[in-house]
Length: 252
Image (tube, rainbow, N blue to C red; front, side, top):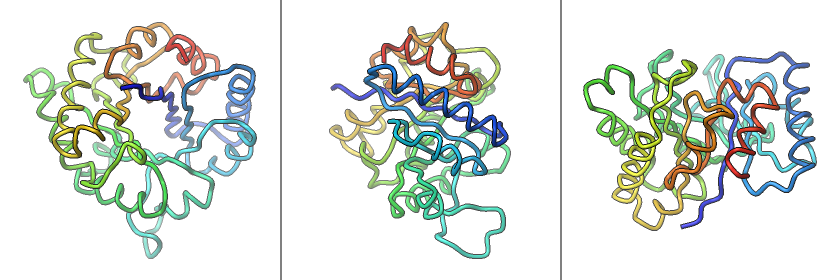
């Protein structure tokens, strides 16, 4: 089944105002100049959402955030609600990234709770899964990713409001990547779990991105695999030339 390729950039905790605006403007110029057939999303830090939204005006690039709280409002110092993100112009929010799971102790149950809140507010989610190096070496990759899917993805999730991103923790920012066959095996297994949870129709339509040291040199091989529907790009999304080269090499 044809699924529209997605190229999403996770800027993480990078960029001051001038940096973020300049990067967004470079991406805008490229996207407007070329007839691309994939969906672009950029996810800057909270402090840059308004400025990046303004810089991208008139361009078919969606704005996403890197996390949200599960409450609409209240006494949650330092947190941002889904409604606030929508108000800033966001369409997407990344949830359950391994750095949130590791650095902030986020559980799959919490990720699921956040996803439900995001849907209620009208946001789409990019829900992240992935195994650590220790889990991989024990041969637990499929089991870990399957468990995270079952516990992180709400039962009413659909292909219209949910994207899955498989990011092996050991490959994020290290320059190391699994083999193409390893990536396809995990993506195919994830799609089977989604079919059991959500039904075959939704699973066949739902996009599964790959992330973890994706760069222009390996994008063509990784993003052309049958069950890979795009990439969640980290470090390479901080340079417009690299980010757009990944799109070029992915054929979109």
